[in-house]
Amino acid sequence: MTKRPRLILVDGSSYLYRAFHALPSLSTSSGQHTGAIYGVANMLRRLLKDYQPEWMVVVFDAKGKTFRDDLYADYKANRPPMPDELRSQVELLYELVQAMGLPMLVVDGVEADDVIGTLAAQATAAGMDTLISTGDKDMAQLVNGHVTLVNTMDNTTLDVPGVEEKFGIPPKCIIDYLALVGDTSDNIPGVPKVGPKTAVKWLKQYGSLDEIIAHADEIKGKVGENLRASLDQLPLSRQLATIKCDVPLPGGPESFTVQTPEKGRLTKLVGDLEFRTWLSELLSDGEDDAPQGDAEHADTDYQIVQDRESFTAWLERLQAAELFAFDTETTSLNYMQARIVGVSFAVEPGEAAYVPVAHDDPVGGKQLDRD
Image (tube, rainbow, N blue to C red):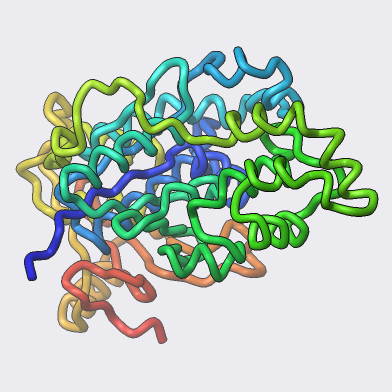
């Protein structure tokens, strides 16, 4: 049986916020905040490594209002404005994504979810399997036999059985479920006092929100009263929770092909962001792709040390040098928790080495034992 092509759709805005809140506040020596960029970039690199996709799109929310704001003035009204520390990272992240050779979409008037929903629907119609990388529960409504969710933050996936196991209902009921329970993060009103257990119970009993509404008089107690008091508002809640799958886009899924990274531009950006391990990997790929126009660093010799013979040779050079530069790559900025994953040193400008000792994916699969 021929394997169906796989399209990867990345919910960039979801990961941007999650990385910002989950990771320590990193910054460059010049004060540029980089923590959210670092988290999203690592996630993208992991997706590329794990799936090696031919088609992939990173989707971000556009600035300004969407059609949901026109439907409901209080939509997301309880959300604070984007912190300045995060705002300063957005354009740099866009530039980094493009330098990595990844197609990117930011569509006015809709949310990233709607763009992703549209591409997933188009891909299914075109005979392509789709993997959506997100941490957003609302995306479960898009899951079907050809659309799967993956959350790279906790390494979980959701297919049709996975959605039923997690929520207690199939993907086709997720929109109705969201309308009933509401969504505090988006300020979508639900039925007061109706939580996940009650919503699932009703959907299993009646099958859909329309049937629940039709049988509202049968539901006893305070929750029944709350349901009947919410009948006029439920269609709006369902509309707000529904991901659009018909957004006009500049191209179909097969037009978003992963490109070869712009090596010079990417190396410059990664260097400016001071992502040292990634920079070492880029520089180790060869000198021919060094950024043009930088005569001071055009003639460089950067090495990754992966065997004892090379390490011994470098030790001899360090012992003979009057002065050398030394740095560590660690798992944390907290020195009480940090573990070393690599060390680097240089004896002359443009001539340096990096020794990986605890990488998950060392170049060529080799590295010296940390001890």
